[in-house]
Amino acid sequence: MIKLDLARLTREELERVITERCSQYGTVLSVVIVQDSARYNFALASVEMSSPEEANDVLRRLGDSRVDDAVVIRIEQS
Image (tube, rainbow, N blue to C red; front, side, top):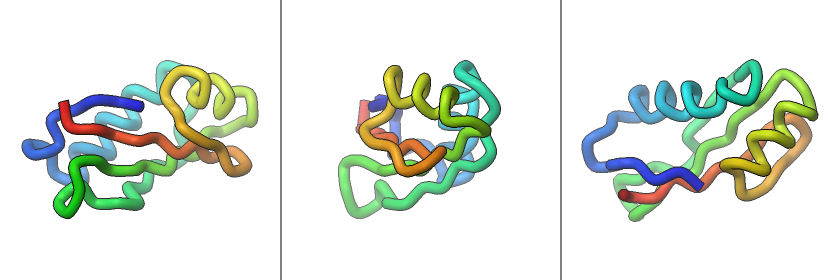
């Protein structure tokens, strides 16, 4: 889970911040915001990493679940 000020971030800014956070653990191939925070107090991001090992690192530190090389991360309002 990551806490951010969701009200002040656009979707593009949110994707950039998630990419920056996850790139500490390897190469980020893609970030997709799968639930918009406009209707909820949180968002979900699907982050695809370049290897299973990197995905495991992101999962251990930030993620909530994993599908193949993608990690689902919950982003809550800070």
